[in-house]
Length: 236
Image 1: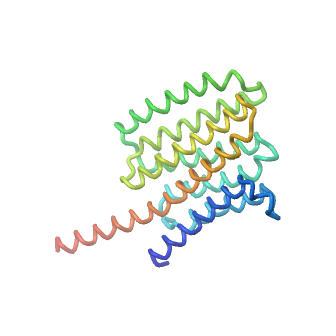
Image 2 (image 1 turned 45 degrees about the vertical axis):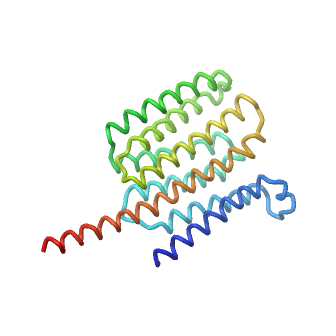
Image 3 (image 1 turned 90 degrees about the horizontal axis):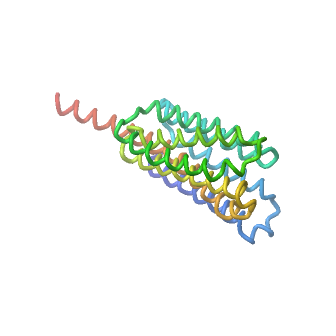
């Protein structure tokens, strides 16, 4: 597929995805014949499609991102009916993201600063949120907080190339933010509307950023191969 066409196609899918999410949380949704959950699942399917079309099928990082986004899709599907079941799919998603970052490799200096930031945020969130969590869900929240903090730390500590590093750090940070919003709305304010209007758009933005990281990974790989070929030809 032509590079320019692919970029425009993925950009179009991204706009449609965010448009569906924003439409779904707006008063205009009342005129839609499709349910709230159905519209969200269409948007979730789009970020999975973007990751599939992004390429880099020989790259373990990109395949881990794809698997993680597929788990997010399953979490979106099962979550509204069973919160714990849905959350476990997101635990699996972060597990795949973690494997992807470990496969890229770790930069000790980046990891040090990332640990400071997300360890502090994780401790703060635990201190504020855990006292309000029911015994039934306490184990799940501790598990989830641990794995998403680990994912964010490794995203910030990876030795990815500059473009991919910026994109994945942004994706991990935005995903972390969306889960903080969810935790606050579920355990502190008991107000789902705050997550409906803020949390959902933030979450889908994070998934789109992760999906685009596959495209960037593929593009960086092609550029690297081209540079190596140019250097070899010059050397000859």
